[in-house]
Length: 281
Image 1 (cartoon, rainbow, N blue to C red):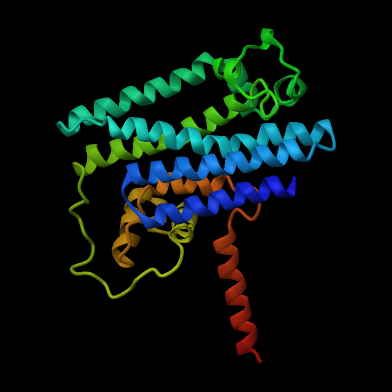
Image 2: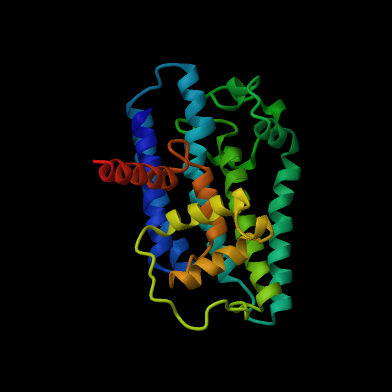
């Protein structure tokens, strides 16, 4: 199982770097698809060469590990299709276009509502039917993709979980695009709190800064909590001369970490404690 987690962790790290390399969404999507497909091939090879020690391990893999990897492939493939067909007309037409896609994505949740609730509630009583290979029960409802899936590397519902996770990320991304169009007319907000560019530059990982911004927002320590996340993110972008890109999507990635979800905040704490110890002699 450690090998599976390593492949997933490596993919997440590669995608984090990709988010920093370019702001071109289509380029990100193309590379994201390529990285995800490679990781999927490596994961499949591991599964076929190293049988699971128990049904419990197999369920954990197909319920929690493979879907998180597969969701990246679905996300980037869908994102590429949506963005490549984005209309070039008015902001209003683009907003309508994105809302139509959000409705289509939400339709998937409604079409799979029984399983959607099962998964969201962290239920386990049907896990053996949903997440063990060769245990398909057509009465429980099947995703149409299952008809074309690899029986050695798929269960009846692991792809459904992956699709739910991917569509969650897509909806967040599309809503952020709508927010930009509706509030800023596709441009940066006019209320720039800085008269000129600052001399400070964020030299760390972009995702780390996003982790810190969300922690400040959730703790309500700025303006007594009466500030929304996009205002706070924009302020940090101006302060540190950085474009955070799709920080909503980056936060979803942070939330999906199973090991050390607040790794940057933990690093800050450890660094401060070490400095204090050094000063104390």
